[in-house]
Amino acid sequence: MLENKIKLTKSRIKTIENGSESRSLTDVKCVESRCLNSKIRDLSRHHESLLRKKARNNLCKLGDRNTRFSQLSASLTNRRKFIDTIVIRENVISSPLDIKFQVEAFFSNLYGSNIIDRPYI
Image 1: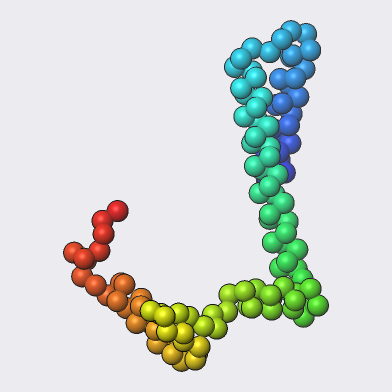
Image 2: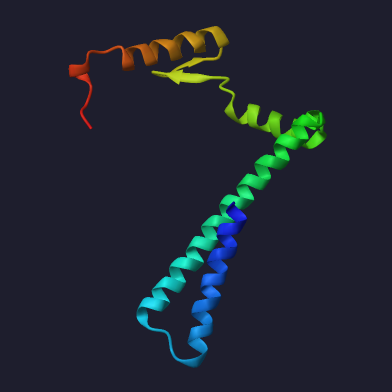
């Protein structure tokens, strides 16, 4: 489906370019050509993204979840997103239970307030 859209767009561009060989392109045709080229770039990115997701899913289905690359990237992500300490009013909190309590308290205060107290966007 996506590949067909790309092929149709490319054939439309070729049609425009073939018309330009005999005479110069009008402003409308130039704009249309630029828009079509932009559309091809967007469709190609989307197609590439779908292919990556498909490849990733196939690796997981085949049981390759425990490859060295997968493990390294997962552990790197976990290390990057892990909260080991927080500082609240110059107090350093490093206990996981205390961090959990402080985060819960912060968001309870933030979203538990009356609607009148919240800023209007």
